[in-house]
Each structure stands twice: as structure tokens, then as C-alpha cells.
Amino acid sequence: MQQRTIEPEMMDSASDADLALNLKDIARINLWTGARGRLLRELGQRFNKTETFRFLDVGAASGDIANAIQKNFPQAATICLDLQHRNLTEAPKPSVQADAFRLPFPDGAFEVVHCSLFLHHFTTEQAAELIAEMRRVSSRLVLIQDLHRHWLSYYFLPATQWCFRWHQLTVSDGMKSVQAGWTRHELEEVLEGLDLLRFSAVRWHFPSFRFFIAIFRKG
Image 1 (tube, rainbow, N blue to C red):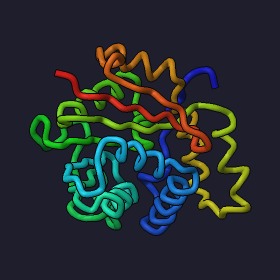
Image 2 (image 1 turned 180 degrees about the vertical axis):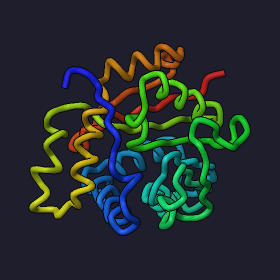
Image 3 (image 1 turned 45 degrees about the vertical axis):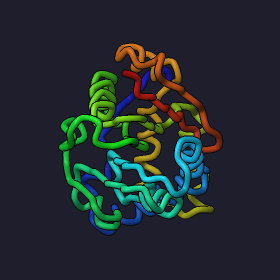
Image 4 (image 1 turned 120 degrees about the vertical axis):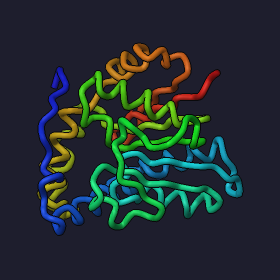
């Protein structure tokens, strides 16, 4: 997997029942691989448990991330945003159906803007546009987590399907997602093109095989 390959995924055309099972799988993956915990620790380094802050989750789907934040930071105000209304059925309210490339919020409306397993759906040029738009509505921090393109992460879901009973949609789309994932160099090039690399920290997380990007607001 030397180069990124973006293929259409099945979730957008899946039945409501299959989509619901797929989103539950993604929430399990976020929990079991420690990716959700890593995000909470990242926030915990910047906000205390009683502090009020506004958090926008872009491409939020079922809202499992927002649920975890509300539980651990009860004073946080979270908004889930997704292009597909049906993805937000189980998401905590308020939720917003909108285009991530044209976020319906003023500049600096949120202390934290986040997306998880979302950036890889787009070309490098589109990813840069998305990051710029997320930064526009963030007053303090943009947090991004996305997949490391690696053969271990590519084969993880099919190899463990017998044990964890992943839905077939999860396995199929998961493998396509890894093919569309990133290397550290590719992500750093996107950030450099936006003149944001000097304000950013790119960290790798195991066992989720994800990159965590923190972009700090300067100026």
C-alpha cells in the first residue's frame, strides 16, 4: 500500500439496519482500541472536569465520541454534525445535518473542533480544505484522528471477525478505509501546505493504528 486508494464505501448505500450495526461496531472499535480514551486524555491535558468548553464533532455519525465527552466533562457543550441525517439517529442532541466543508457556524464558535475516521474519505486537496474549515470555527484547538495505512491495520478486521463478530459492512468498509489512510509524511505535507505544521503535533497511537493530530490556534 504505497499510495492512498480511495474507493466508494458501502455505508452510504446500506440499509438502515446494516448501518446501525456498522456504527455500533465503530463505537466498539473506538473503545476497545483505546482511541476514545486517548482523545479524552488529550482533552484532559487542556480542560479540567468542571470547565465549560464548546466541542464540535465533525462527521460524528452515532455520536459515541460526544457521549464520552459529556460523561467525562459534564460542563462541555457538544454538537454532533454529519452530512447524513440517518447517521445521527443515536447521536446526543443537539445534532446538525450539514456539509463539513461549509460549517454553519461563525469563526471561532468552538474551543475544540474534532473529527475521527473522517479525513481519509477525501483527496489530499479536499482534506486540506476540510482542515482549514475546521480551524476557522475553532478558537483554541483542532483534533483529528485518522488511520495509519499499514498492512496490520488492513488485515485486523477480517482476521478478528470470527472473534468479535464484526458486521460484514464493517469489515469491507474498514479495509477500504485503511487503503485510504495516511502516512505521517503525507499528513505533515498537508499541514505544511496550510502553514500549520509549526502549530501542530502529530502522534501515533497503538493499538488503534491511528494518527492523532492536534492543531493549536495561534494568532
